[in-house]
Image 1 (cartoon, rainbow, N blue to C red):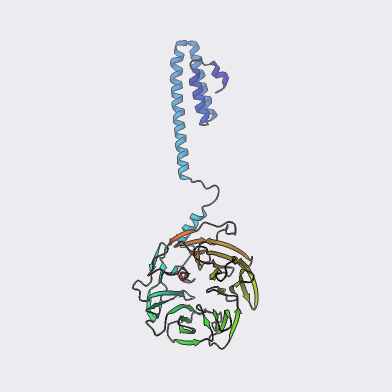
Image 2: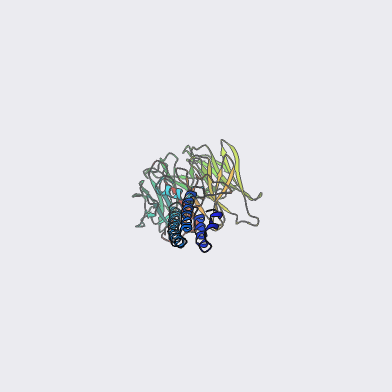
Amino acid sequence: MNKEFLNQIPSEEQPIAKKLQSVAENIQMPASFQAKLEAQLRDTHNEKIVSAHSWQAKIIPSLGWAILIVGAVFLLNLAVRSLMTEQVPATDGMPDTITSFEDNVKAGKVCQGQLTVAHNYSVFLSKQDKAGFITLDEQENIGELRSFSWSPDGGQLAIVGNTRGSGNLYLSDAVGNLLQPVLSNSELGYLMDVTWSRDGSQLLTWEINNNTKLHLLNKEGTGLTEVDLPLQFFETPQFAPDSESIMFYGADATSAGLFQASVDSSQIVTISALVENESSFAWSPDGSNLAYIEMDRDLGEARLVVARNGDKTIITSLPIPKGSGSSIPDSANLNWSPDGKNLTFEFGRNAIDRAVYLANINEMELIKLAESAHAPAISADGKCLAYISNQQIYLLDLAATELSPTTLPAPVLLADLPSGRARSDFQLDKLQWKPAGWK
């Protein structure tokens, strides 16, 4: 509505006309609508020249109807905008990767396979939808759980526990149903752990009161044999790729460190005298690389080393805090990603100051994934990392494009840690995904 036309309207009617113009401009009415409105007002103004007394009677109803129409359009406009705001959430041009990751987990598209948890002397298996956990030994036949291990094909789960100091070894099927015990109230003492050979044909366990003797069984749990070693081992040995030798952290009368010994104990080789922690070594999935963490007290650093055919490469290092003395940080739960490109592990003194790290062996890059966290485990599809923090289990999207030392995706809470038989040390907590090949 142009200014010249407004000036032609009687002064007593101009406030109404200006109000109408203001409303039209505020709601951004089309120019064609405003032109029609102006034409209607001009026609009414012309009629006033013919009859001065009828102008006011006609312009006021016209203005009233116009204001009513504009007001209705204004309210309709607000309603449409409000509806659009509710139906189209703001994304700032970026996809909601956290929600997408959660949806994919629930749909079974990532983090495939069930997650097994050892906590407070009990063992649990996640439900298929990962909405919670089931207890595998509700009757507590296994006793005080110590550890577990999945067979390489995911077909059997070996579980070690103890009853009044007597070791028990049970095997479950692929869905967690307990089978007949392999060892129950046996003459063996307190069993510490269990592991499988890489071809899945053998089981290995050991007892705390005789930590120079290994107990070997076949995959059915029969054919128990014993192997005596000339040194002590402080954690369960891992089979080498050839299944003819084992690796373990142990000590003899003169030295300690990481050793390799043939199964018949005829030959023992020292791999590194600087390895000081349990579960701080692991073979790559294809068996070509051995990774381990050394604690160099003289240099004040922990080094992640990858050895291949006798050649050693330092992938990365972490400082050992000054003044640690004999209480230096621990490294634990070193494990490979399925593609053999990354390693994860935990490092720290206790559950509060521990952190979970990921190291890329090709780029030699170290990323801190989580603070106050432990027991990292990579899923069989390599897309998901599970870890424990503050009595809860979290999942982290390892396939996220923003995975870098400076930018990380937000973790997703899977569930609270299920309660167990009795409180145990956090270092006994263990997470392991069922290996690929089984759903």
